[in-house]
Length: 316
Image (cartoon, rainbow, N blue to C red):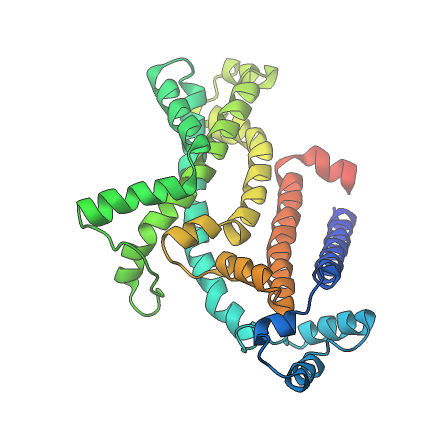
């Protein structure tokens, strides 16, 4: 098991390195001068050249890459060409907003999605199963921005129960944070709920028909113990994979929700940086998203070994 963990950590580090190299190369391959684009064509060539030298953009690409990586290890993510602020300050301001919206949405989706999938599998063919399946199908096929617009129209404009847009930090006013975060959290959770509920139902149906489940019931083990101790443990293996994939969506794929509800998170920051070719912001945002994704995938691999002893034996 220790060898398996070390191997997965080394592979994860390699993936992060390759992602950093890829995004750095792509941004510098694109034609045009980002400094000139940010400063405008009214700026003199001397001023543009001075900014290029400050950002180390006049040095060879290999040297620029290692300077960027060295700065990352010292907490220096570079300076934004467009915002004229350090990228670390931008991430410190934007990343918590995305996390404070995305993590509650994921927790809500996991609890409701897995629970609904279990109920749907145990009540297969009944009205409960059909209802959950219908809701999950609608959730998977409904765009997030449409859900957000409908939510604003009903709960903000029609009923005047929730704020229309905006974000307030939970450390400033927790009650106002809950009001403003409720709709974006639910919108993000619905899409994740749909995939989790469908996968949990499918996995549970496959597991509860196995011979060892029938044997456990024949020995007189309580139904609750059979479902939650024996069946659910094996059914969760593919579900955990879906949860690991959703981490990337939570951190980097929340752009539509952020735009609809005017939450200036990392998704909005990344989109604006790509449009303006803000080198250091794009590189840092992609690197942050890849780090979250890699850590999530590493956690999923380790959980595989916890849930399935065969993986520990074969990989250890």
